[in-house]
Image 1: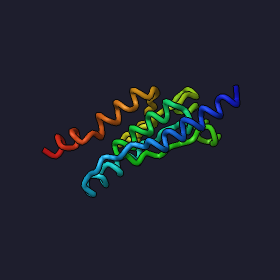
Image 2: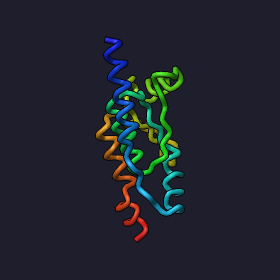
Image 3: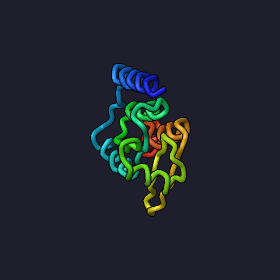
Length: 129
């Protein structure tokens, strides 16, 4: 089973690399605002997890600079995830609010929806109008 997982993991990473999506292009000032907002976000993930790859691709497509925390390689990240989020399950997005409150979001679909609603170009345009 280990060999099968290793091969599948390598294939997932290879195809993700080959078919990397293009990022949204924004004005430098707009990207700087988004970069500031994303400093309070962190994605806890495994590199070869298909659901984590799905979230990372959405992050790339939306041009977001979100810290990724490899739970597989770091005991510190593993402890943060289990203590903060309550589960050792990936992907998980750590969201720190401006008031210091922290929430943890599991499920790739929910994470992608949250990111697209919060950082979509249409949302940015409606905020400036």
